[in-house]
Structure formats: structure tokens, C-alpha cells
Length: 295
Image (cartoon, rainbow, N blue to C red; front, side, top):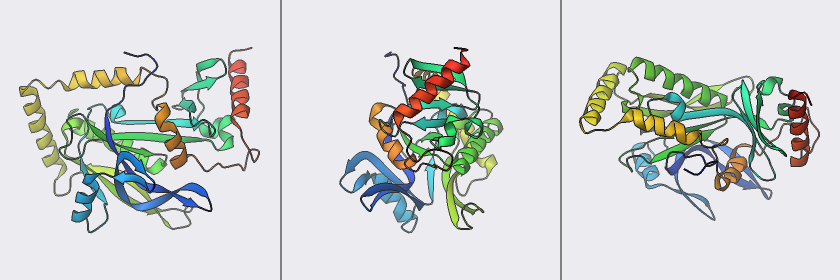
């Protein structure tokens, strides 16, 4: 296996609740009130819709508000990876990824592991460049057996809700998360910060028309059928865990520019100078690491 390259689930397409639009010569992210499922291909108009998108719209009166899915792994942390992430706006590459306890930072001396105080207590995060960032892989319909669609988000509501649901469903099903009949559902809420206007986030529930008990019963049947033909879910989870751990950062060079454009273009500069360059960040990172190591 090539070291330094994260081995992630094969991706057949993307799931989003927003898009990138061009305004006044600038490309900026714009939120939406529906799911969009696209392929991995872009043209001059943006991402090309996946055939599944059209089929779900026909059953949803033109808007996709729920998507029937299954998960690839029993371990919740393999299906949903979420960390605090800081990306370099010039190169698009991640320069700091942490979980609130430790973080991996790219400095001029290479990648180092140091304490992560979370954005609220981190000097570097005051620039507004550090956000929670989650990636959820799901299977839709009868596509390739191990192929997935990826939903990326920087929303606290989506990350927190998805993490809770995954953990709870794993517990109540007896660790049969990958066999559960589930669906992604778009929900709305309003807050003081949103000025009472609706903001949308993603939830994970049992499929419409099923009770939790019925979903667990179906999961047991699917699990028994898989075991009867030699399907080894435990080995699959282990292979995925090894693959994710093969690199300090999950995203490849061909993905980071798109991720920055969609999620990290807006910078909160209320506590920082108007312009935060990559060289400035790297100098701060180096100083922080040197201080941590007692240099």
C-alpha cells in the first residue's frame, strides 16, 4: 500500500444541499432547500446530475427531501469522519486537522502532532479559517456493491445530528449499522443567529414507513443472509480503518480545491487582519509548534 495516501471508500457521486454560484465575478457557495445528487464530472454549468437524482425527483414532486440509503460500515466513525479543519486558501491543502484533543499540522518542517484546544480556544482559529468538517459515505439504491456517495458538510447541526444517529442506531441494532434500512432526511430550523430564517441540516432516520423495530428486524435478516454467503463485515471495517489511517489527511490533491471553494471561501476577519496569507499562517504554526516543544 502506498504510504501517505488515504484509502477511502470508492465514490460514485456527491450529495449536497447547496451549490457554488458566480456573482459579481466571484464564485461563492449558496445554500439550498433540497438535496442534489451529482456525478463526479463537471461541465461549464457545474456538476453533472447523477441519474439517481432524476429518479428521486420524480417521486419527490421535483425536490429531493429524503434519500433511501444504506451504510457501508458498522463502525459509526468509518461512515462519518468529522474533525476541525483549516485549509490553505492559496493551495487548497489542509494545514491543520484536529479532534479537540490532538491535531495534525502541516508546517515548514513537515507534519507534526500537537494538542488541539478546539477553535474556541485556539489562537490560529481566531482567523476564522478553522471549521468543523464532516464526510459521510452512504450507498444509494442498487449501485456498485462497495461504491458510495459522499455528503460533505461544515454544519454543526448536520455533523452533530448524524453522529448521534449513527451511534444510537449502532447501539440499538446490536452493531448491525451496515444492514439497517435508513434514509437521509433534510430538516429545517431557525435560530437567533439565522435571524429566524430557516436553515437546513441533514438527519438520518429509518426509512419512511418502517418502525425502528421493523428496521432492526430487516437488519438482522440482511446480516444473516450476508453471513451465509461468506460476507465478512468485520474484515471490511478493519480494512477501511487501516486505509483511512494510511495518511495524515483524508483529502487528495484533486479534491481540496473544490472543497475550499464550496465550504471555506468566507473568512471571519473580525479578530484578525483583513488579509491572512499562507505564509503568515505557516509562520504562526511554526511558532506554535516551537513553543509546544519548548524551543
